[in-house]
Amino acid sequence: MQRLSISEIFLILTNLIPLFGVLFYHWSLFSIFILYWLESAIIGFFTILKMLSSKKRVAIQTPLALNDSLLKGLKIAFVGFFMLHFGGFMAVHLVFIFAIAIGFSGLSHLGTMIATIPTILLALLALILSHGVSYYFNFLKKEREKYSPLQLMFAPYPRIVLMHFILIIGGWFLFILKGEYILVMIFVLLKTGMDFMFHRIEHTKALKLDILSKQDVPRNSRKNQGNKKR
Image (cartoon, rainbow, N blue to C red; front, side, top):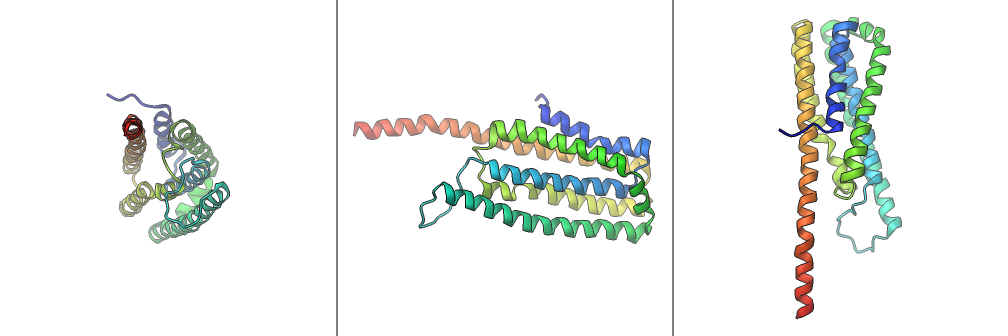
């Protein structure tokens, strides 16, 4: 059985905070949705940091020689494009959250969410810490030379799009069923499991890339030696 990494431990603990909020601070489903929406914003922020700190060159066909200045310019351009389309995605998702909440419960969930803002802020700080730990231990220490800014720009979408699709569909059913606490807790546990799965897949892929790159080094050296002999 594979041991849990530091970032995985942080991920599990922070994902269980909404359970604590539901049980002891009467969080509504709307409060949980807002927290998950804010988590997506955190993922977007750390994606920008990854794009800026990536050390892998962008593989594109161009007649120009890509010196360091042009590469930095490309990074900034990719970051700007990412902020544009990711911001649009976030705006649309926020509209869906409010539409579902207000459509089924009027403004009652909004009032509950406002009352729980202090505990939501604490949960938000924990999520920032969790993603910061993953950024440091996984990306800066192991992965920054494996992914280019272009690859990183689209990396969050499979996880976020699937997560929010499930959140919207699941939330729609929970609002219909009047959001019983036991159902909300099951919902949070499912989201935690899905987050853990995507996290492990993402970083296992990076590990495989590292192994393949190390295997290519002796092959290339043998080819070079063979060319020299000729």
